[in-house]
Image 1: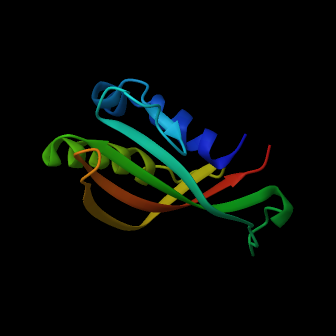
Image 2: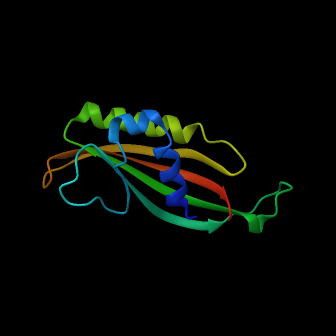
Length: 127
């Protein structure tokens, strides 16, 4: 399982996220004409994780995952971003954990969509 699959699975298991976007959480790009709001996940980078704990380093991986929420309304997009952040921020287990690094928002003139971009450091155990 990849970092994006792990993050997507966690988001789709959240009733709060699903209530806002149904199953519209996509890797890399959303299909054209998809209902809004939606979420796009991008793997920014992935590296082996080196640890000083008793878990062997070859069993862990770290990645930077970008989560971008899109929608036609600024407030609604921020509501989705908050639901995503609540879910990912609660991950602190040995199998999967996440920490938000930064967040910004913007607007795409071409699509008339607002967006919130958040980068997370995601740590997961290897399969």
